[in-house]
Length: 189
Image (cartoon, rainbow, N blue to C red; front, top):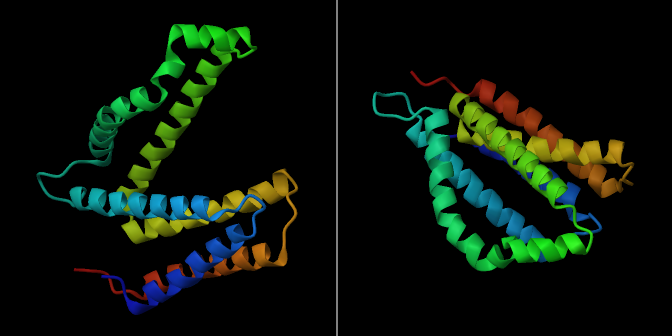
């Protein structure tokens, strides 16, 4: 169980990320609620996955667990994808899209590259999850979002409002407090 100080340190992390993204020009409540639902399901998956990774004889390592989850996800989502988007992958649809200027080869290459990058990211994420607690993993994901915001500011020269700056600073301060609170927690025997 996390200590009071660990839980308390998560408040500025969550608040900072919310502040940093709340003032985005493309902000809307449906997107925000969808992102929060995604966070809850993703972190729930991490907690349950971590329970399967506990060191004993009958546990799965991170690679096998990730492989099983990926295969099950594929089997569950293929029928929905075919039902919702199947017609868009028929040869006649792709030919009509190519006639309108869509480069099918480039689309396939970019789709494969995006899939490979996402798979690699998820695999590394599971490797990290095996080494740390689910809460630490979640804090790392929050830091990743702050880094993306900072990178977009630098790379795309996105204007930054004072609230964005405050949110980023608050989130980074929360991560610092979290790391200090983790050092205070006694190690289990």
